[in-house]
Amino acid sequence: MAIRARIKKFVLTVVIIAALGGALFGYDTGVISGVLVYLTPDFGLSQTQVGILTSSLLIGAAVGSIGGGWMADRWGRRATLLFAGVLFFVGALAQALSPDVGIMIITRLLLGVAVGTASLVVPMYVSEIAPPTYRGRLVSMNSLMIASGQLLAYIVNAALSPTGNWRLMLAMAAIPAAALVIGMYFMPDSPRWYLKKGRDDEARKVLEQSYYPEHVEPTITDIEHSEAADEAVKAKLRDQLRKPKVRALFWTGVGLALIQQFVGVNTVIYYAPSTLKSAGMGDSAAVTSSIGIGIGAVVGVIIGMTLIDRIGRRPLMFVGLSVMVVALIGMGLVERLTQNATTGYILLASMIVYVCSFQVGVGVPTWLLLSEIFPAPIRATAMSICTFLIWMGNFVVSLVFPPLGELWGASTMFFFFAVVSAFSLYFCFRRVPETKGVTLDQITAAAES
Image (cartoon, rainbow, N blue to C red; front, side, top):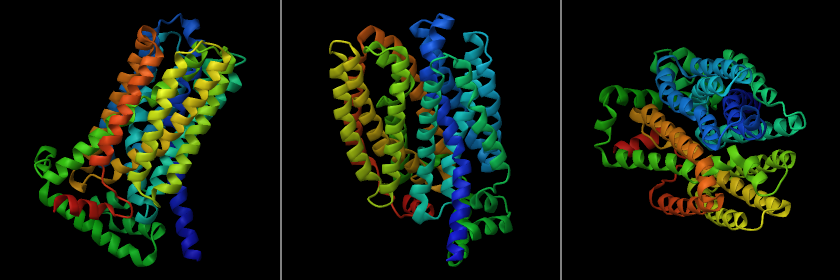
């Protein structure tokens, strides 16, 4: 039992520290919702400028998601997360000190590189350290930290709302960024990366702390066989895609990446206070009410984490997406009612249900599946491409929502997202495989058979 406790403590320590990258991802994407309420009049921004400012971080994130895969393979997962932590720290302080919107856009681009890098490397790092039995829950810890980071951002926004101090709202991210840098300095790299670089003793040491003793040598053998197969093929992505099963998994990953953004979740995360304000709430009430959305997201992640290794990935997606369709239709209908405080609170309740069901059916399963479904020869490249698509989709939706919402009304946008969610439900039913209890190397073998 002592061995079990020691192993569990080590794995959880690694996961929690690495997942600080997810918390920063959540904080930096969530904090802008409250910042915009006070920044927009301070800088005199139009709705188009609001969209550009919000989405500028996402362009940087797209760059980070591509560069992060290369850095993770060349420098290691640990060093790449250290680099991301430094960028998080510098970016948080730089945007808080920005004298005008132009400088702030540049600093948010820099911060976005850190967000994109962490969004790719944290799930990769955790999935390569976690034992298969617990991989789903441990990789999903990143989703929990993302949602918790967003909730923390909403709480900070609400606490500072009476002062309107949006600069301090932004600067607070420097604290968890410093914790990420300090924590990752003392962490090991993943055993898979160590073995790939010929550092067998270091790989064995990590596995001895992560796995039960009888599983260490078989795991090393599995990884070595997988890496030997990678060296034997050394194929480019397009060569691997000639294999029908690999091609099918790749396009499934692309579909999951696009679904995560085009169901519209980040329009709620980024613009909830502004949307609630337009529905009839006051400034302070709109900002404070966003805490409910953050709590809904955290609850959804906890539900997803609890069930994902019990009932599987597919059932969660079916339930979550079905509830999302209903919630989005409700949001669209509420937006067409007379705008007053009551309408605002009904809209808030619908948003909470929507965000909670998103985390259960899309947020938790997507990040996990993207770290699982790709065979080893293309895993890093395919994850980079899919993470890039997630951020570009996020950029497009976040950029166009303010001006299109102003032109067509938020109601029409919510109905559009309901249609996308319904299509996504059909896509997941037809294309998404079940990976519960399957090792990464078994997935590779099945795809290449």
